[in-house]
Amino acid sequence: MPERSTLGSPAAQGAPGAGAVRALVVVYAVFALAAGARATVQLSTRFDEAPVAYLLSAFAAAVYVVATVGLARGGGRGRRTALVAITVELVGVLAIGTLSLIDPAAFPDETVWSAFGRGYYFVPLVLPVLGLLLLSRRPAAQNPPKSPPPKSPPPKSPPPNSPPPE
Image (cartoon, rainbow, N blue to C red):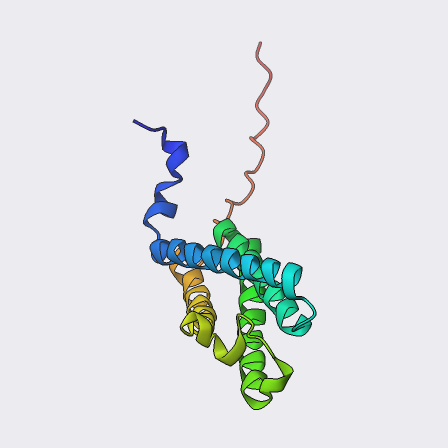
């Protein structure tokens, strides 16, 4: 039987939304790998064809890596890191998606975020929305409100002076 410490604390295992966070970590890791591999091939073989598009794919991969690490790490810092990365991702998907539809000539080749992630079945558009929803509801589920510290009893008065023993 494995040691209890290798499984994590019981609260972390049974925490509401823990399965959803794990699933999100896996999806972000897959997208980090996919976008990173795509950008690496594009940048190393066809950089001159569409440098902006390929650099944006590399940027998307970096954002996915940061989001993956933040979500996997958890805790306050991990959550803040994931929140910033996922917000940047959503802004990027919306901006690049809109620009790629308005001015297709500016993007001679697709990025991960072109046309709101059409090449990835719109997962790049849905993923940050799910991530932000999950991050916005998890604090209340995992961190119950802190009760104020217990009040300490008033200091005791010193014992009365007793006569010395004879």
